[in-house]
Image (cartoon, rainbow, N blue to C red; front, side, top):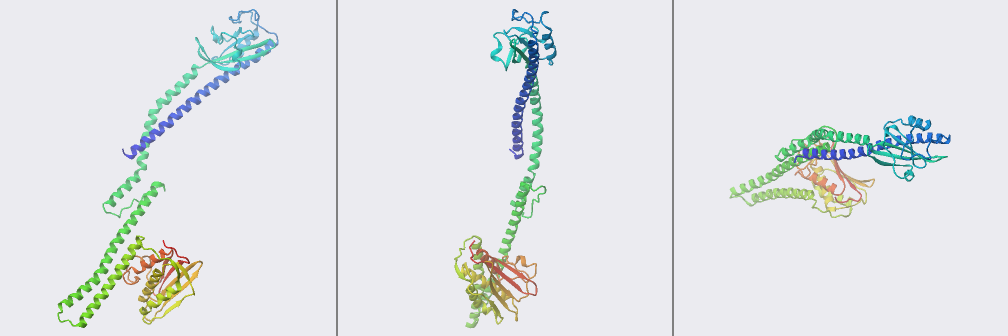
Length: 477
């Protein structure tokens, strides 16, 4: 089932559930409101009649024959006092309400004209139900809401019985039900159309993501979703997906360049070796000196390939996190001194200025730090012209250890600086460490593995400075 159809059905189900809950709530509230309104009308009229009754009885205006009259016969004959007639006339504001008045003996004294021959009470005296509402089923008037009001007078407790029909309430509620159920199909249709449209609009970015993913599967990493609109979850997903594609594209390009550069760096020495060996094989009269020269060339190129392979293996293992650091307390000033002594032969008379404080201690892998410092010194020596100098400085600052290696070389153009630590990167004046293009990337990995950084500052014609920033206690990643 398509997602948009699934979402539309979900919208319909939620709307139907909400509609049913609303219908039940409306039924309860509407019925209760109409019932309370009817009860208040009955109670108000009954109390008004009771108040006038108390005044008339207190004035001695009793209907004739109350004591001897027939309790089943309404006392509204021509002998009935006028006061009871005006009670009925003044207090039947709502013609749908019905009233009866009973004397203390439970005999009917007066009733409303709209009762005709019907009765609101029959049987035992209503004293047991005084002051309460109830439902009374009349054979002529139908179901009624009835209230029994006792009225205390000097002549005893009289009773006013008021009632109102329940059929109008039921009719109104039935009309509400018909309106709700009649409108439900139309509302479901509208909600379904809107829900489907909203689902299609909301899933439009998903379609763009799917199309882009399909192009990636076919090998095209140049496409991007570039989703526009508000920064919601789908926008964030699309931007994250674009960033992932960019990373994959860069990774693929780097891998391709890596393979091309590695092949180039391996092909050159292999070509030299093959050419030297081929020349020796053709020259069957080669003497010992010539053979030694060829042997030296082969050895030198083989050593170069060995260093390249070792650097490649180091970076591959570093990427996989398979190079554990042998951490221990290390005197960094001693490590720098040893590296300077090892690199002195490369300077060929160029001065080396060393500024080392005493006892700069870190927790690190001494061998890896020695490799980092030596690579930076070799790199500086290779790019320092005759008459220039190389400077090494070690200092402590706010719990950090800063190692700087500076040369007086030609400097680096600004466009090359961001790529200087990329593997096999070669610019016109790029610094590539030992010449394989892997020395500086290895140096940065060593610094990062110890919780530090390696940065470069350079300007054309003003030399280059590499600064390694290490914590006083370096920790392996």
